[in-house]
Amino acid sequence: MIGMASLSSGSKGNSTLIRNNDELILIDCGISFKKLKGKLSELDLHEEMISAIFVTHEHVDHVSGLRVTSNKLNVPVYCNQNTGMFLKRKERAPENLTYFENGSTVNVNHISVEPFSVPHDGVDTVAYNVYLNNIKISVATDFGFASQSVKQQLKGCDLLLLESNHDVKMLQECPKRPWKIKQRILGRHGHLSNDVCHDILTDVLHDGLKQLVLGHVSQDTNDYSLVKDLAQKHLEQCGYADLGMHVAKQDEVTPFFNV
Ligand SMILES: [Zn+2]
Ligand SMILES: [Zn+2]
Image 1: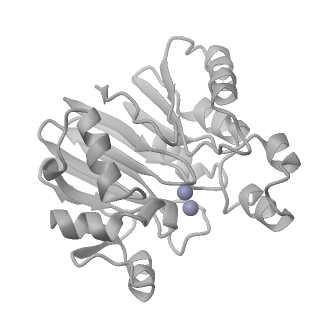
Image 2: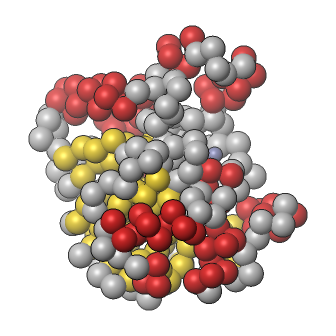
Image 3: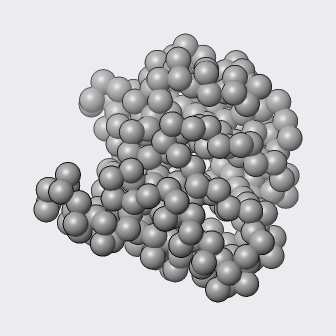
C-alpha cells in the first residue's frame, strides 16, 4: 500500500498521512494525539507506525497537536529553521526537532521528502513533494497565488492534495469575517480560491495523475458540494472528467488513496 489520506483538512486542523507499506509519515499535526489515534484506527493503522512528522508552517491549525504527538511517539519533527525558531519562541517546539533547507531532500527510511517554498503569511511556509519509489505525492495547501514555481513543483505527481479554500464571492459577503481578515485571505500570501485552484489544475493535470484531493476548504466561505461541482466542471473542460476527485473535510478521514 503506497499512497495518501487526509486525516483532517481545514482551518480547525490539518494532518495528511503518507504511507509506504509499513512506514507512515505525517505532514502537519493540527489535531490532538487522541484524535490522531482514532483517525488512524479508522484506516486500520497504528500511531507506532509513524516515523516522522513534517511541518509546513507554524499556524496553529497545522501544529496544535505537534509537540504532544512527537514527544509521545518519540519521532523526529522536520521543518525549516525559521519555523522551528518560531515554535521554540512560542514554547510549542517538540523535543526532537531537525531543520532542513527549503529545496533540499530529507530521507526517512524509504520515503524522500522535498519541501519547497510557497507564498503564505507564515514565517517560512513550505509545501511538500514526497517520493516513494517512482511515485510522487504532492501536498500543497496554505498559499495565496499560483506562482510559476509552485506550478512547476506540482507537475508530474501521481497524487495531489491541493487547496481550494474559498469562493471569492462567499468570502466577500461573509458576515463572520472582518474586512482585514478578508484582505489577508484574498491577498498573495493568503489562501487559494476555487478559481485559482482550477487555474493551477489547468497547468498540472496530466495523464499520470491518479487522484486529486481538494482540501483546506473553508466551512464559512465555501461549500464542500460547491467545491466538488466546480472542480468536476473544470476537470471536464480540461478533458479529465474521469479523474478520481475527492473533497477532504474537516472532521472526516478520507479514504486511503492507494497508487
Ligand atoms: Zn492552514
Ligand atoms: Zn496557514
